[in-house]
Image 1 (cartoon, rainbow, N blue to C red):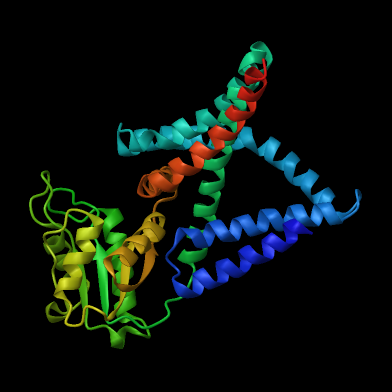
Image 2 (cartoon, rainbow, N blue to C red):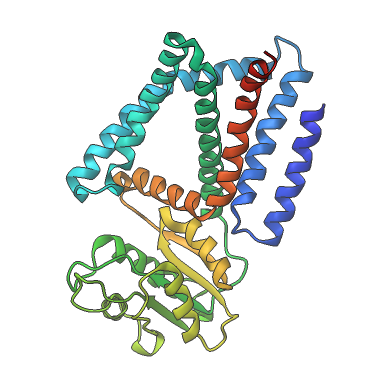
Length: 331
């Protein structure tokens, strides 16, 4: 019963937090925590042969079987990323994650068996891995939920985030974002849109500002020049939003921000920090690109909340280490 009670409290907290602001990661943390504790509560109050117990056993077996499948998928995806996108740390993420799925459990199990004195440390490592896994699941689940939410209000402005040019040309990733903005402009609620704002400055390897190239692309798609407001100075997502907001006649006007599908939730977090009344929508991304991109976004979110995460990790480390120290202090 205590698990079910806490689960209900967390569900209420998730509902209140969601109603206050959809763009908070804590919404996903509350929701996943409530689901886990609620399931544990059902297991405790049900009999040994109950449906929840059988489903839990089936889920555990599925996780064991799927781990090597997931590892192989991530490794293959990493190799595809290296071949199509080039060698960089960001493109190595899915490959490294696939190797870690197999290597980390094997290394921990080997240390537990070979060096009994290290069991406490391996337990700490397992706790930290479990914490990171929990945060990732919370992020992934809520990202998928947020990405499928309809906007609460019709936008007056549509901000398109830049993602880099190929010289002076708009590459496929950026073209998908611009095409999504065009569909919004021509959609059934397009009449409320005052302007499209393509946003992006000029990188060292680019022949002109992204915003300028994006505006040309929009005009080629039939968007009138007087309905385009170019932002051509931004070099980060926060600058994209801040500089675009400065162009708006009403900074508190409802806005839709268009980015790639994998970047939707983190962009939404940025819009909250920028003080925009914004909904973020995602353009389609090549399937092979998504695993590495989601991992990159997750690492960036961990860094954004680094002090909170370090605090939780420190607590997870302190408890088992303190338990190990108690017998030593008694001598």
